[in-house]
Amino acid sequence: MVEEEAAITMGEEEEEEEENASIPNEEYSWPVLRFDVPPHRTYHFHHQFITPTNPNNFLKAVKWSPDGSSFLTTSEDNTLRLFALPGSDSDIPLNTSDDEDSYAASLVMSEGESIHDFCWYPYMSASDPVTNVFATTTRDHPIHLWDATSGQLRCTYRAYDAMDEITAAFSVAFNPAGTKIFAGYNKCIRMFDLHRPGRDFKLHSTVKDKKEGQTGIISALAFSPSHNGMLALGSYSQTTAIYTEDNMELLYVLHGQEGGVTHVQFSRDGNYLYTGGRKDPYILCWDVRKAVDCVYKLYRSAENTNQRILFDIDPSGRHLGTGGQDGSVHIYDLQTGQWVSSFEAAQDTVNGFSFHPFLPHAVSSSGHRRFVIPEEDSDEDLSLSGGENCVSVWSFCYDSKMEDFKDDGSFNDQSGSGSLD
Image 1: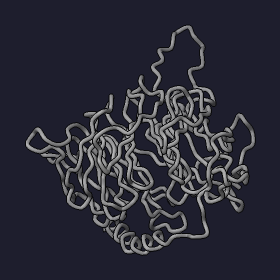
Image 2: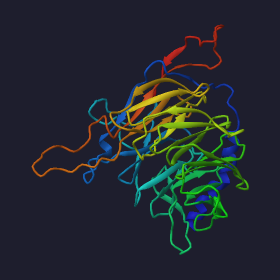
Image 3: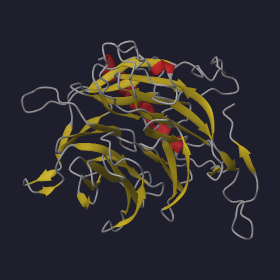
Image 4: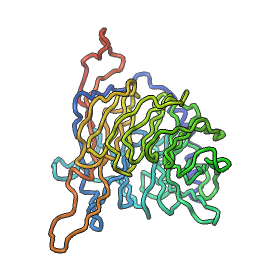
């Protein structure tokens, strides 16, 4: 009963949140990030991810919250850590030593098994505890809705198979309206009403007549940000399918990924879709208005790993950033598909990269699974260095306004160094 009341309360307020979010702020213009200047590492975290039972614990992913107030990490120790972003009036104690973490996580939440995926509520605001939530899906567990204010589990959404046993989702996402949770399973997706926690859901099979449609585990989900009702589903069968959200009508099935799809993301205008896969060195760009051929490919060093390597598009929608096994973050121009620049983010696989939703900052996570067999007579320390298995917050130089062009088409020199304070 408490679970239902909590979810219903959020449902009553989400219409107001959506209405406020739709009001454009004419005074604000996106900062134009300058990628010709290497970013500055503002904050760094490493020691908090070392556990006594697993000294080689590694990061899996990192994502900014929609309001930009914090970022959330997942790691191999089945733990979620929430880091609030310090501000000018922040009381977060900062450590300036290069050998220590910049500051401690605000919240630490433990799951029972390996975390498959997580996502923020789209209208989340740290100033409104009702909407300050995120969803997770873990192995052999139902979907959990976590309170990002208290760190407590708010409610669960449970899916059952034909044997009436709980089955875990492999991917999870909120719809743009914030009223439903879409979750990916083997050859199907399930849709949960956010207002009704429990075992009520709608099931849609992605395979028709055992032949047509999309086979395999639905490993990635993404909704178009332009509110055109399009939904992309990535599968370990190396395909990506595009559906309409309202009736789940299949529009396209995209082929071309060399490995199972692990991440899908629409462009800011909703006209293009970017897909990446495991053991696949290319992010593919598709024009969803025709979706016949791949527009271009973006290279990243990922051909030798099964990891999910997350990429992201900057707030202006002009550039894409992605990590890889080479420890660098590579920036690409989305208008031309050309490489722009890169910078070293870690001495390890960079498996997560996320731009701040409106400030000239980004966050990266690194790490990968290591199989180390210690020798009996060896006193070698198996723990990783500070440049491995770490999270870093980056500050970019930027031009203050997108509209400030010179006659020759270049930007006016109004660049400055981004600051978190």
